Length: 537
Image (cartoon, rainbow, N blue to C red; front, side):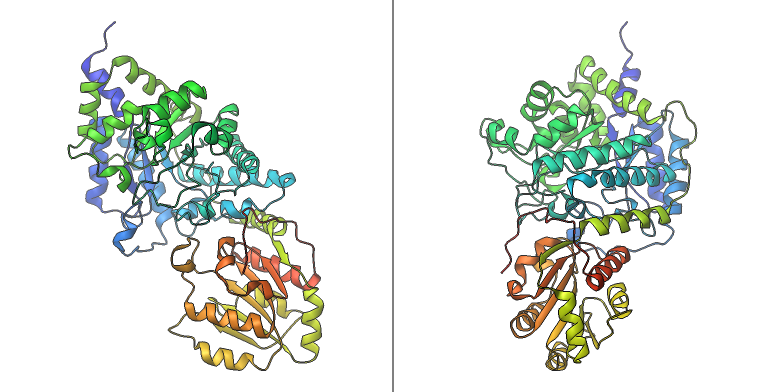
């Protein structure tokens, strides 16, 4: 029986997952409702606000925070679902929890922190996946565009770094699979990204097109390994990255998202994957500026083999292009994959889309356990003894960088190790030269560095004056350094090798600060290992 043109159009609408924004205007919300009603779109991908969405951040628009974002998203999801004749698959990028997009929601550690956990603690990764899944379900979200399967083997990577489990392919694969299993346990769909691997790149694909120089053999040996493991474990979906692999494309720099050779020949035929394939956001500059005609990009992405067109900006035009160019068989294939995913998420048979409350207590308990198993000792010279001896002789001081003295780490230390405290918060309110002068009177200094940013741009936003101060102190004092932040910060600190003690604590969460303080006071062994190779100066 031949399908009617209208029925076919309704099916093509399912491929489109435009972006929606929690903190949007009523006018924009009504526009989304129109899209849902008129085009039978398959799902939505939520972002906090237009200013924070992928590629918009370089315009430096101010992100306005809103304590009601969580309540707003719940209400919006109910509203959008009411407008849909086919239940929408609601997606969000929540790699480290809803907190990645929504304020006042539970936050879990970055993947690089989880990558510091010993292999025998992979149950904690499963728990993270499960907790994030429960948080998403509470909001009415069934699809998490996470985790990364990227192996981070390039310290200059501007966009992956802290979002990857590390550079060991087995660990990345195992931890990604555990995270997926945890989400699956509570009925939330997962997604491995960014196929065929975004780790060894030094261009941010939000802004430009990274190019991978590897051959297929090299990719199979390393980058593709976690994806293969994911496929073996029935991963729900795989996201294609905006990155070019000339060796797979007759030497051309075609983005993988637009490449049949990458999606059809490699992922589908060679690796045997028949699950859902989703494009990376189609508004990203590496692809969004390629075609002048509206809808052409959406057609090219679909034609290359994507089932879901994420952050599609030209829905009506894209539908027309696909209808004009695609075979009914190809449309049917993608439609069936999407409906299978919706079936698994339980939205086709249930009428309720939000259930449950956020559990901050469970999140905190889990974060505490992760902190206890991930903190990593890099330089150890009996620091606890050293500090207590210095305190007896009034030779011990504490210095907090980028947080005031009221931080949890200092409070924990002060229970047994009170000493004078100094803090540098920022160049506007703190005077480096007076801090330096004051510290001349002490021989041992416990330094807590709260790294300002997770991304490596501009030295993680550490001021040159702070790096100069650290360099001076490390050469002239006995410094015990605790780093709360991305471990890739370590090589940029001059003379760090001269530290009397160096502990990598990864996150600035209260649970990590408390664990670090107790670890120091009791000289507790550290179970974590650096998830990436790092040369300190």
